[in-house]
Amino acid sequence: MLIRSKNVWIAGQFFPADVEIEDGRIAGIRPWGEGEADADYGEKRIVPGFIDLHTHGAYGYDTNDGEPEGLRNWMRRIPEEGVTGILPTTVTQMPDVLTKAVANVASVIEEGYEGAEILGIHFEGPYLDMEYKGAQPPEAIAKATVEQFEEYQRAAKGWIRYITLAPEHDENHALTKYCSTHGVVVSMGHSAATYEDAVMGIANGAMSMTHVYNGMTRYHHRNPGLVGAAFRIRDVYGEIICDGCHSHLAALNNFFAVKGRDYSIMISDSLRAKHCPPGGNYQLGGHDIEIGEDGLARLKGTDTIAGSTLRMNRGLQILVEKAMVPFDAALNSCTINPARCLGVDGRKGRIAAGCDGDLVVLEDNYDVIQTYCRGRAML
Image (cartoon, rainbow, N blue to C red):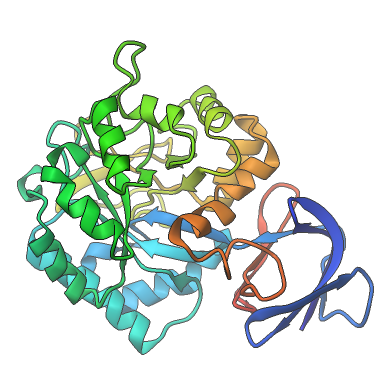
């Protein structure tokens, strides 16, 4: 199959090219106009498929539901916003719920599905700080132990690839050290960590921060906290929710200005309510939530933010058109940066020979015209 455009994102720039895909992979990149194209997109932008490292659900489904058909439906439909790679994300809950949730993801991976590729599981909690738990259910927050995590990882058949924890509650950084030496990215979040705590977490293997600004100590010029650590330690990844609500547009701009084009990771932190009609009753971690007109979810009857309904293509638009983030930095944050963080950048996050055929064709207004998941057109 040959896909053509005068604006293909190659080597950090738009370039006229033909993209040849065979057996789900990019077989080669040719000069524009060579051969007969199966799909000619004119001057429409073709960019790498988006990767969402932190997303709890969509289409009425939540990862904690542990239901295979709901997960399959999510993967089949999420390419409509340009997502081709994903980490279904748990939320703090009791051990039986989490065990069922991670086992379900592993089972669907083994049995097969269509659409966006499940690159692993993001295990958000239950090893969090009570004060900075956000909407995570307090009754299920637990002490971090290697032994319990190993039980979850066995249920997940090794598919937990990313974990959010509060480093100050990880005694002797035992779980951080275990995960970082067993193929699991450790991200610090929902945490009361000081700047010094964060540095020690990184020294012991942590390499990312979960939704910077949210669920963590605030920046103060005498007490920099986790936000200060995210800014100071530039070669540590930082997730950020780019809906313009979780963080002010100026704060988004500040974050990207400091972190640069290589260590910022856009996430949706989306809930089951994403892609659902307005209204309806929803839950997160067993607690009732409500969706506001701004698209934010909050614990019912409170001002506590409980996640978003952000679509990744809209997050890219917000960063570029409203937060005034340079396009290359904004695009990297949802393509090559999460791929590098997960260690899959050899085949994801780039348009280059040998990489998976994960492509998104965008309108000028960031609407998704077509998404290719491993070479298959999904829309």
